[in-house]
Length: 87
Image 1 (cartoon, helix red, strand yellow):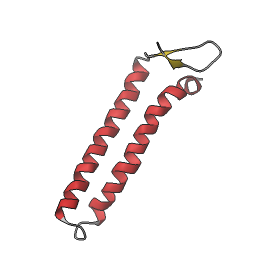
Image 2: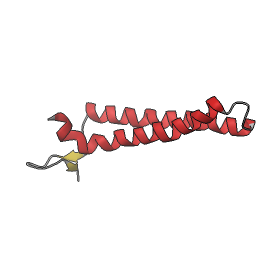
Image 3: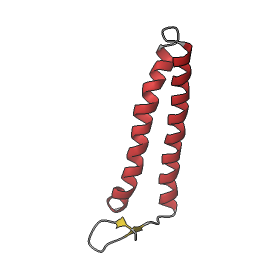
């Protein structure tokens, strides 16, 4: 029941975290791990910074999802329907 009720709200936040983690972080961590002697030092530095930035974004999304679960405000529960954004 909980997942059905809050899924349309919390699913977007978790979806953004998944996109951030798997697209941004995974792509650049591959460059960091396997491109050590194959890419220029500037490219390696850029990959390191992008992994750090992706980790920061991922942390923000997870914390915002957890914060919303602790204090669920900003939506209006409609009787017999899905929650919708508050006014």
